[in-house]
Length: 232
Ligand SMILES: *Cc1c(COP(=O)(O)O)cnc(C)c1O
Image 1 (tube, rainbow, N blue to C red):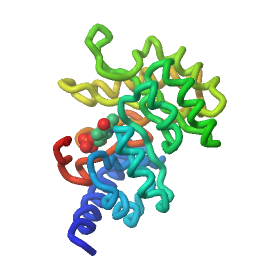
Image 2 (image 1 turned 90 degrees about the vertical axis):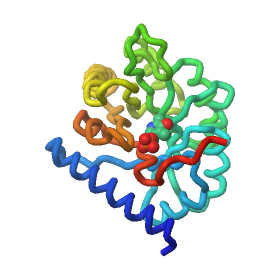
Image 3 (image 1 turned 90 degrees about the horizontal axis):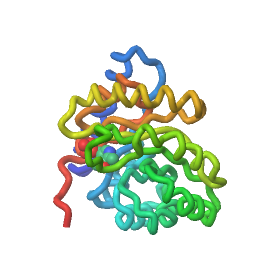
Image 4 (image 1 turned 135 degrees about the vertical axis):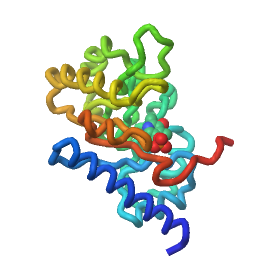
C-alpha cells in the first residue's frame, strides 16, 4: 500500500465508524450511505478510494466532474453532482451523473430531463432545500415554501426520478437546529412524495447531527481526503 492509500484507508475507516456510532446513537437500524466528496482531488485518489470499496463519489464543479468521471469510467462508480448548477450545463451534467443532488429551481428541470433522455438513462434527483432564513440573501437551495411546486415538476419529468432532499447546514448556526428544521420540511414533503425518502445531509463536521435528524446519505470530503488544495 502506498502512503496515500494508507492515509485514505485509515480515514475512511474512521468516518465509517463515526457513521455507525451515529446510527446507533440515534436508535436507528437502517443503513446510512456514505458519499465521498472528491472535489479538487485527482482521479488517482478516486481510483484508490474505489479500491477501498467506495462506490459513491460527489463532485461540485461540472468541468472537473466531467473529466474525472471519464478518467474513472472503468470503475463503475456512481457520480453525485452536489454543486451549483447553471441551466446551460444541466443537460451535460445529466449525461454522467447518477444523482443530481442540487436541483433548486424549475429552470433546471427541462435541460436535466433532456440530458438524461439523450443518454438513455433515468437520473435520480434530490431537491436542495435552503435552510437559511427566508429573508436572508440565501446562497443555494429552494425555499421550503417553493418545494412542493418544484417537486411536482421533477416528478412529472420523463427521464428524472424524484428521490428526496438535500441540504447544507448554514454557516453560523448550530447544525442540529438547522437539521431539525430540515426534518420538519422533510416530514411534510414525504406526505406528498412518500417514495422520495432520501435525505442527503451532513458533512465532515456535522454528520452526527444529520444522522440524528434522519439523514440517509452523508457527503464527506475533508475528513477522508484531507484539507482541500487551494482552488487554482
Ligand atoms: C464540499 C462539500 C461537501 C463535503 O464537505 P467536507 O466538509 O469536506 O466534508 C459536502 N456537501 C457539499 C454540497 C459540498 O460542496
